[in-house]
Amino acid sequence: MNLDPHVPSGPLAQKWDKHRFEMKLVNPANKRKFRILIVGTGLAGGSAAASLAELGYNVESFCFQDSSRRAHSIAAQGGINAAKNYQNDGDSIRRLFYDTIKGGDFRSREANVYRLAQVSVNIIDQCVAQGVPFAREYGGLLFNRSFGGAQVSRTFYCRGQTGQQLLLGAYQAMSRQVRAGRIKMHPRSEMLDVVVVDGRARGIIVRDLVTGQIQSYSGDAVVLATGGYSPVFFLSTNAKGCNVTAGYRAYKRGAAFANPCYTQIHPTCIPVTGDYQSKLTLMSESLRNDGRIWVPRDGGDHRPPQEIPEADRDYYLERKYPSFGNLAPRDIASRAAKEVCDEGRGVGEGGRGVYLDFKDAIARLGEHTIRERYSNLFDMYHHITSENPYKAPMRIYPAPHYTMGGLWVDYNLMSSIPGLFVVGEANFSDHGANRLGASALMQGLADGYFVLPYTLSNYLASTKQTPTPVEGEDFKRCEAEVREQLQRLLSIKGKRSAQSFHRQLGKLMWDQCGMARSEQSLKKALNEIPAIRDEFWHNVSVTGGEQGLNQELEYAGRVADFLEFAELLCHDALDRDESCGAHFRIEHQTPDGEAERNDEQYSYVSAWEYNGVGQAPTLHKEPLTFEEVHLSVRSYK
Image: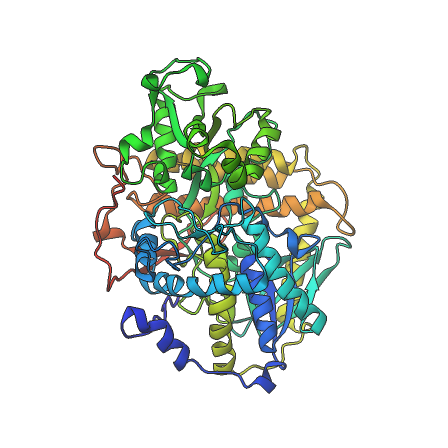
């Protein structure tokens, strides 16, 4: 497998500009001859579709939601980073670059991260031009707030609805191209396979979720913008529909899967309250700007929070990380919350929670200001918990949220399968072992608006394209395999629901491969996953038929992929015998409990090659080299 990252030569700050100049172009009159298939309509997929169609390409866009506006990007709350330095507080492209590299614990590709920081300044201008209603100061200037892992205010936001407003901006840009006839939308369509012809991605197999019809689509390039795989833990902040299917099936067709063990646990989520839950709710990291996190100083203190005096409170993040305080990065804040709860100082039912308290902020700024900043988040918390966060602290606890791993891509965002591009959270490229808050939206829009339009055009201009009809043997074979799996699921007629298997897998993964991992726990998971998978294929109950709407069949197919993918994730976590970022192996920690990297042996990207169900995958390594950054112990104290 070829893992050439194709990083341009030259000084780091000039690589992207140099590369843009050297890339081949497609004549405007020739662009209409090409057809691009884009799977996913979130910020990465939506911005890519709009940008490529604006250039003149024919785009077919697919999503399993009933509208592209329902893509999970809509759930992003807190903001989007950009190195504008509007606050004149010392920010710069280089500082954003360094904060991102350091936040990822020095496990990301340096050139990609620098390009992301460069492009970030253009994203805000693009979105403002689209009418995205970013928060503004009294004088009308764009306002910023802080997020974890940074000592500057660089996060632009739309109250607690930033993802929704950015997605509407991308959606209106797409709608313009739909009306112009350059984008054809396929809602309620789920991609079930990638078609590789003569070593290149040339199409996809899709199931219409309303009619059940299996259809093949041919194109000159395929773009996956299908998000992450946090629901492998069952309970996560992701929507119930989020899944690993598109990325995993591309992996089974030959695309390398990179760093699957890098899974982010978000520190501020509403705690689990019972076995009936099917998902968890995020409370934006932005709340840590004004909220203070604490637990009782002594275990067993069950007094109401209002009755616990300051002397009996432990503001543990402020105590342990005085330089960053409550805005320590997500992986660090999550482990710190788990640590105090493990000590018996957790709050709420089961002791799995910590307080996020706004009493001091309300006293300092007034309740009106806090309402202006966070009212929709406070209302959401109140509706879910029946507790008033203006009068009593929120209860929060870490939960699976984002995945830094994904399909391996080179500098051009192309996977190890030529012609298959991967953008946004679906790829691995920019965040290393831990993503900083407000960087997901930045990456998705950077990939879609400002990177892919150049690199995909370069691929098309450099590759001789031949017609690939959907009647060809490669399409027929893939289509037959998709039908065979659907019929196999329907024929089992067992006694357990797909959700029961998903819940069982998720609990195993959370317990053995969650916030803390060990050689023993990972081997336990690898031993138990095949047994769960075997029972699934003998005892799952999928009602209904292949034709027409059948959500049980959709869900069972996604769970089947999770049951294979979970094994890959654990293989990667077991192989990476170090702690870095969100990958915390308890055997490798400093005396004060921080992650302990092993740069001599593990300064590389782990890219895995598929060898069959139940077979150990093959590891390929892309060495990480750093020209501008000095590897050091990551400290936020």
